[in-house]
Length: 309
Image 1: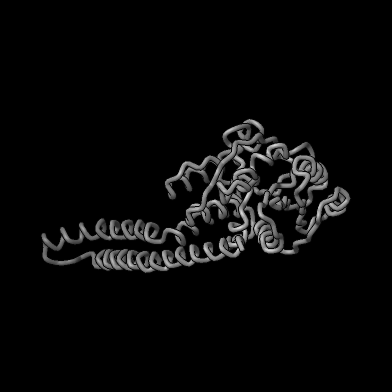
Image 2: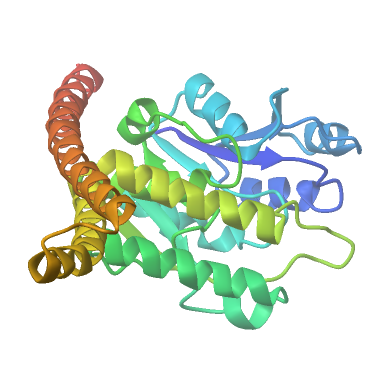
């Protein structure tokens, strides 16, 4: 029987953590339930311990830091990640892990946005943010994913052990999705029911500051994973501006034989050179990215062979 590990990041979830642990004990009785506490100031640790979970502590603040520790320390064949706020149903767990156990997926995402999220979630800006992030990633990577930021996910062992966690906060789900897209890993989305936090439980996600971090992460990873496209568009923009500034200067030169707006001419030359440099930057970085993808494929193959021995 393949080993399943349930991973629960926890920060001040005393109101809900016991129910979450017991629900997953009921629906996945053979799984090991881990609670990774991230400096909670309430009695979440005691409650989780008494509920029968394996409790670990992570002292670096931030969900990304918690997940980095989870992935480094826990050994399993299938990893199920779930938030400790009781917004995701434990009865959907078998559906989430099944594609991993059957070898059909490297990452399974619990899709909230196709079911009850927009009616259950009472924070309007969160709804808008989810739609914006989904649109950006689907446009850049030419995919049709339905839920980018879900906290209910299952992973294969190879995904967990070869995934470089670079972000420290709530951007982690976005990073996971983009990593899977870039490395051509198999993603399966399973529609799930979502319910809002119970009364008295507060979200740790700060709508605007964390939202800006997510957008910044998308732009950064776009630049890192698709540098030719990123710097290519930047090159087109810069050269387009250079032409726009140069045309009136050139017309004046044809008419009077002089360049009276010399600063504008210098600006257009500077923009044109910047555009050319940007294009060659994208070309060079694209070679490095392709090399990185090849190295990842080699690592994945080696990991797969070793895991089958």
